Image (cartoon, rainbow, N blue to C red; front, side, top):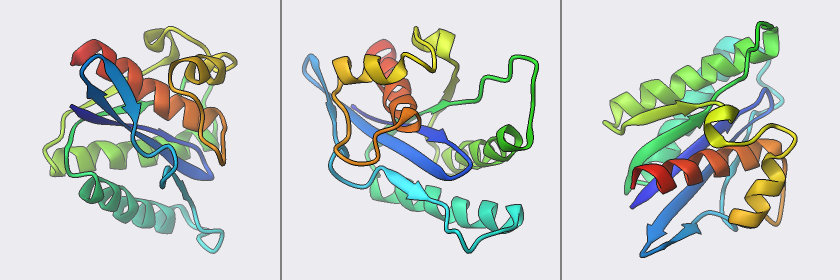
Length: 154
């Protein structure tokens, strides 16, 4: 069973493709593509959204065996800002692409993942290790949301 976890920031889209094999969970794209940086030449949100949609669709086409998408969403906690609003637009594109590709999707918050933003990297390092390049909280979020989904749903 193969799943994908997504996490979006204002600068990048991170994703983790995980597969359950017997009783173990394997991080398929650890050493491959797992970082999609927004081009610096894109300055308007309209262009960013347009570009991101094509990248999300590309990722789903390349990973055609995916059975479910897990999306780590923002923790609003009563405060909203332009950065959170912008990432919410890209989250919506992931939901739209999931529907278009007929892949079920689930959104998760930290309390549903059993951790917090300041602990997520450590949790991932124990469960799955870490990426060799570009290791950050955004990647850890994508990994953990996919891991917990795979662990609980399949």
